[in-house]
Length: 322
Ligand SMILES: CC(C)(COP(=O)(O)OP(=O)(O)OC[C@H]1O[C@@H](n2cnc3c(N)ncnc32)[C@H](O)[C@@H]1OP(=O)(O)O)[C@@H](O)C(=O)NCCC(=O)NCCS
Image (cartoon, rainbow, N blue to C red; front, side, top):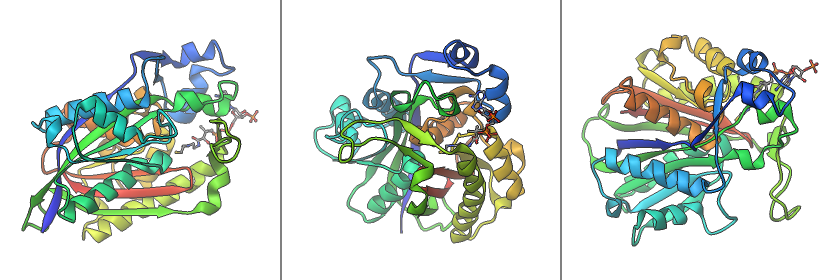
């Protein structure tokens, strides 16, 4: 049996870090409101030279180094983003060029905040097919470029960044050995209108700005995330009690708390970075993962569950023996 093993993680953030207080000088909001409703204290905002591709390439370099590989070893790049550098070519190919990889398979996946989970399932399937051997799975975003800075109900919630993971195909006879044990994805397009961007190539011909009915998104998020984690764990023959760490999409601390409570998971097993990074969409899960790997919390052989939900709606979970 071929298994996709995580052999390295990396992340990158824009240089500029913006506090709630700084934001409150431009937007009618307060540190108190943002912290109480969301848990967010800081977000990083990309400067003119920092783009989704540059952040992704920096995260990818760190992941490749952590895996002890060189860029030429990579034969697949799957990059999740809703904020590509250009409409085309795929940002994955820009990252390929920045890494100096002469030949590989490279494409983008668009599932907004669930994009990294979608990318993980796609890369895992390609590795297990036996055709590709070493994949870079990246989530990278510059949501600051699609925020309406006049809309306080959305602009305080998001930030920019990138996270990456190296997956390597290895033969494994151990059903509970290291690697991706199960993935589960969903989409329900009936909810397109609750979280979207009001522009696009084929409609307005503009990039557009993010729009969200936050309270309704919140309501769906807790139910969907708890359900999909249980489904993915069930596919792996496991239960929430087996989990060492949950690495959730970092949208709102209250969603993280409510989801953990629903599954009876102690808060201490949930990796939280939303206070430092805000919601970085497809980057949030790999950024949180890399944070917890580098600070020593997540170690080899830990059982981790990644989960995310985003516009579409789309949502998903992955169970990994790290
Ligand atoms: C967006 C969110 C934080 C709002 O929290 P909430 O408790 O639902 O707050 P509401 O939208 O009901 O707004 C409450 C009040 O705060 C005000 N408010 C909204 N944003 C504010 C801000 N940044 N600063 C100060 N006040 C604000 C509202 O205008 C409203 O005032 P009113 O009662 O006088 O009309 C919350 O709904 C949420 O996190 N939703 C999920 C978002 C999400 O996860 N999206 C990404 C998924 S990928």
